[in-house]
Image 1 (cartoon, rainbow, N blue to C red):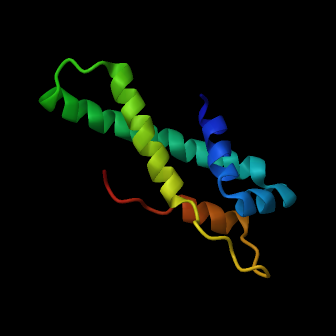
Image 2: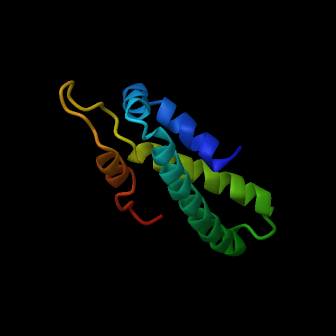
Length: 108
């Protein structure tokens, strides 16, 4: 599955955010930004898990590490999305949504 597809699915899990971005014609930009963030987190986790595995679990298959890294990255990115929608009269701008999504995450 592609990063963009996964990012779009993450946004769809937040229907109010998804609809607001769609109505404002910012969904594509948000999805692409989220996909880049997901990819960078996936790559970072792959590197980290590879280092750990070489010491703890030698012989672990690279595709298994990549799969585990993707699961962690998805959970991390999903957790960074706003849980609640903004107040009814308050609109969430793309900049605000992306700042929230891309806020620093704790080190792995």
